[in-house]
Image (tube, rainbow, N blue to C red; front, side, top):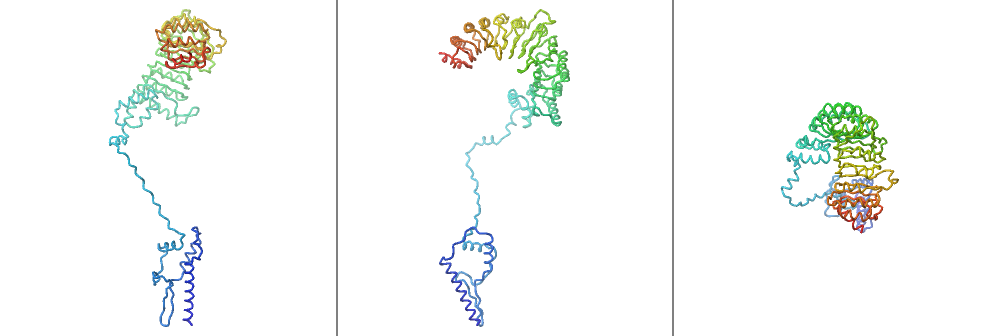
Length: 553
């Protein structure tokens, strides 16, 4: 019974094995599963593989046991050995059987390709790799290079930056020759914001260190847009800079009497004082001029109503060696009237060479003044240009220039009351520049036609280098006659610039000017009503002016 039952079970198992093998060969089994399988399915299949029956069958005989293999392959061993979990052979077999799992390939990074560089000479390669060339230059060469940059861009902050490169550059940047002219702008804080206490301390330390270590030969010092520490800066600079000659304060605030006292005490060589568009105590400047005004030769101021006392002080003779005096106002300023006593100023400043009154309306103040006029015998430049109405007349001009035989530049732009006869009688035989154009004046259109320009050109035809009669309402005949005198004096060949903008100059006159004046470099014919549209423009250069002849033909 037992033997027959065992044989029956063995036959049934053989039939199952043969059925399975036939399914594999016939291909009736469904296709392989997709590559994407869930994690749970993989775990179930792995468990079934572990619990599968061994590849043999044990049969019991009468006196022995028979071990019969399940596989029919001759390559499979008859002895069963349990395989290790996770072995490589098992993974490979699974991959072959299932066909849905492949072993991932290792990523192999490509090696960088080395480019074949051309052969570089050894000297060039050494020069490119050597970044210390600046450390081997002679110090004198570096100083000359730095000086060229300083002349163009200023000493600050250029010298402060290059001094941090190396010791050699620091020594070259510390040369006193490079620090003779210094301009310091307000670079620590944005305009309109207040400084922190730490920032104020750093500003003072920087100014003091520069004055003690760099400004030994400082001569020209400029301070721009400073709203605080102006007194402290001037006191330190005047104390450590005995050679200071020029001081310029532009748009600065907070200048008190203490700063002027420090200048008078330490800066005994100060000759130029520029306080234009800066706020200062008038009493402090008046006290300084009364004590040390004899050393001042140049003074530039902004006119305000509170400065009338300052003009009175200058007219008393506190600056006898004054050579340049300039007073100006802003274009939108309403305080343009400048009362000035001409005889007193001529007596107080006999060495005056340049006198500029820009955008102001000078008025002769004769109260308490002597009737005799000494004039300005050394005056070389007089400017009374203005953008508003002017009170200057022929008499005022004569009082100013009655003895100015060395006058070279006369700027009367905006002075509509001056006549050609008033200019012709001036005792100035060598006038080189005459600016008489009418700009931004309300009275240009309402003025009557003028005559007599030929008297002006006839007087200075051989000496004039620049002539500006823009928007002057001279007649065509008078302009033709005036330009003919300039053309006849072509042997002198001195005229370089001619401004005829807005005049009624004619085409024949322009042809004679261009043909005779070979040295002419600038010609302004814009808004000339008698010229063709293509000719109404500004010509610069002799070649450009010669092309005008082709346009007028």
